Length: 478
Image (cartoon, rainbow, N blue to C red):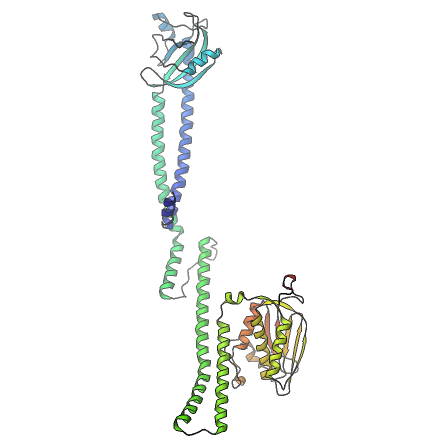
């Protein structure tokens, strides 16, 4: 059985559907055919039983006692039409009139009718005559035999040849109709399977085309009002290929932008190293001040490359890798840690902070990095001796600097990857900081905006969902 199931599972879907439809129809047709056959059999037997009831009266004399006719007069009086009549006594002996078609074999059920001695009570059964032909028998207790004075019953029977012939013909007809029905159902199931799976064929061809050519522009046409499973599958495939195409475009754009951003520091780094190498090879020392400037430039370029590579690694991390590290984080602690780093990078600046407790679900390292990037921007664009105001209230973090601000036409692009303001091209940075901030905040379910501050400067606003107290199950986990 298991081998059959495994073999069935290896068949194409069309074949399986056709077989299932044919099997279902075969079961239904078989059930209907068998039910029909038994109903017809019952009706035919009911008619035969009625005929036996009519024959029963022809074997009883005028006074109601059993008569075993032996004379020609008796034959004329009691001759049935195409039937068997015989007397059966308690000891099993029989008396068969000359007008009977033959003798019917006596069984224990016939003797039991005599033993019960219930007048005019009898049984119907199938039996055989002396030649082995099938007959329908009615045995009824009628009282005392006049000849032997023994309790006796009258048996009347009729041949079942016509009934069995009718039932056999009906069986053959039902069998033929069932076979035609099953074959027709199989063909119909195959046609329905082909029609129903035609969209699946298109989907399969599209998938094979994408796998073969990596062409993600393939779309499967779907009717707008179609809501069946195949339509849903087709829409899901179209959404998947669209997402993959967008992802590939973003990946290619990221690679192109990264290559463009890496080219400048690498070129500068190579130039500085070549100058230092040529100085060593030719024996012409570079002035000490120039040498220190070159080494400082090399160090700055290396730092910029390291920051750029770190940002690219952060952007390339998958959603699954980030989701595994999500936990309840104290935003207040993340801001305090970022403030310590910001004060080291801008010792000449005054940073005012007012922080209130707030807990949110996020990746701790990513959240702190996002806050650091916001503060770095504020430090970078603040004038010497300037002030930075940092506030955390009700889950809303605001960082306001007093720098030159961002032009209105540049605000829509501040969170784009590798985008840098023309006025900030000379400053260090990869153009990925605010992009990382936006993605981190969005993954935490929050929002981030950058805009003009009243009185000049820029204000960054980060809103994160959460609560001022940690959930009970996280208390003491830090």
